[in-house]
Amino acid sequence: MNGKRILLIIGGGIAAYKSLELIRRFGKAGASVRAILTRAGAQFVTPLSVGALSGDTVYQDLFDLTDEAQMGHIALSRAADLVVVAPATADLMAKMAHGRADDLASTVLMATDKPVLVAPAMNVRMWEHKATVRNAQTLTKDGIHFVGPAQGDMACGEHGFGRMAEPEEIFTAAQNLLGAKGPLDGRHIIITSGPTHEAIDPVRYIANRSSGRQGSAIAEALAARGAQVSFITGPVNIEPPRGVQVIRVQSARDMEKAVQAALPADVAIFAAAVADWRVKNADTQKIKKDGGALPALALEENPDILAGVSALGADKRPKLVIGFAAETEDVLAHARAKKARKKCDWLLANDVSGDCFGSEDNQIIFLGAKEEHWPKMRKSDVAERLAHKIITALGEEENNKK
Image 1: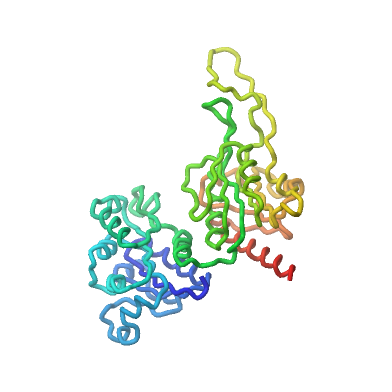
Image 2: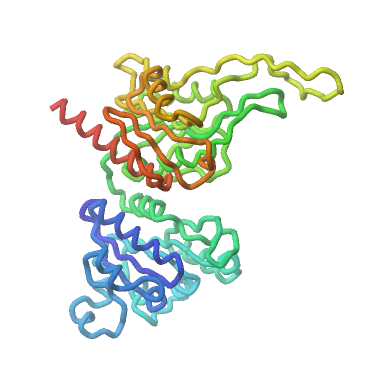
């Protein structure tokens, strides 16, 4: 997004604090950000914090004659490549839908001739209210683009749709609208994620507690940087990442076939928790409990997908093969042994003896040319750090060719 100009309108809602991270992400990607802070938005974030991150004037008042002389609302509305409204409150959406223009934000939105992306944020009842539903439908017909809202817990204590999309989701949506090329443009990356289900009979299966959150976060981070991502996922209960090709599988053998079909690739990341064994004598009918002897389940090993891809010849092997190791004890020792055994380039190990599965946080030991102990962080931040390492490694590989 280098050189792109973003006009960010910050509405009045608790999610306004996320706008600060959004400004940082745009700036890190090379975009410039000008911000309009509504009167209600200023109750949640300060002009000082917004201006410090954007490095530009923060615009607030429609009738500030100095700003009108230097940057009138017409010019302000058109001096951007994209207008982003985050958070977009129910009030802001209503003003947009009905053509109101009684403050700087709504006037700029009326005057702009650029694409507009809104990230709704409000209580679930407000989002589901018939008036808001009508307004969202009107805005969609008018060509306004939406990202979110997401489902989850809210500051008011209720649960449902209405949470503002996370900054990385808004950033990705903005990037897609602008057609911006990222540092991974033209690169194909395969990612496996989630658990596998190994059938016992048509009803029962062997599985594990993998939520797929880490793999999904990595997919979104890489897609946001321009990569073509083939996302191969076992059964999970989370929304699929945006901007990627989603390939759904059930068993380890299904996943292996999907990986082979997706090759060749520049990078392959194996974040899935693939079941080590499957039931050799899986029944074609539901096994009945009859009070007699327990059914005997014969197990056999599943294919080792990570080791198989690592062992491919130079013409088919991805430039980077990255594995994951979920351990409950002696994490580093087991991770070192797994990396040597699988012959992958990098391995990310984590301790899953606590509440890692399904949580938003992760703590990684990175095994590459050097070993790094990453502090506990959100899984989205783990994804960001890994994406940066991949970009650096592929850039070095390109430089070595020249």
